[in-house]
Image 1 (tube, rainbow, N blue to C red):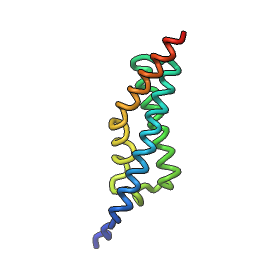
Image 2: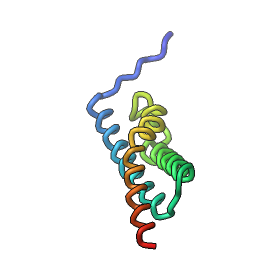
Image 3: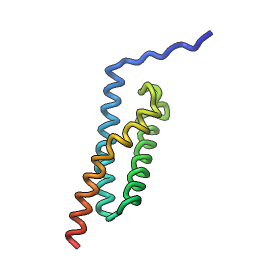
Image 4: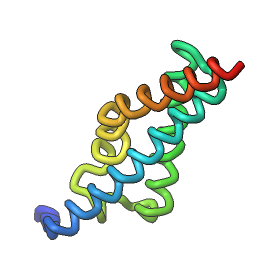
Length: 107
C-alpha cells in the first residue's frame, strides 16, 4: 500500500509564504542595521547576516511551524531555510552600507 498523498489548500500555502517573506524582509533589514552599527566589514558582515538569518529561520521553524512546517509548506526546508537567504541579501547590503556610512561619518 502506498501512503496517502497530502493535499494543500493553495491560498493558505501562499499566505504562509507571504508571512515568511515578511519575516525575512524585516530580519534582513534589521541585520543590515546591526552590521552597520557594529561597523562590520567584508566577510564579518556576511557571516553576521548568515548567523542572524539562520537563527531567524530556526525560530520560525520552531515557533510558527510548531516543529512541523511540512504542515504549512510543500517543501519546508527549501522554503524556510534556502529561499529567504539569497532573495533578501540585497536589502541587507543596502541597510548595511547606509548605516555603516552614517556611523563612520559621525565619528
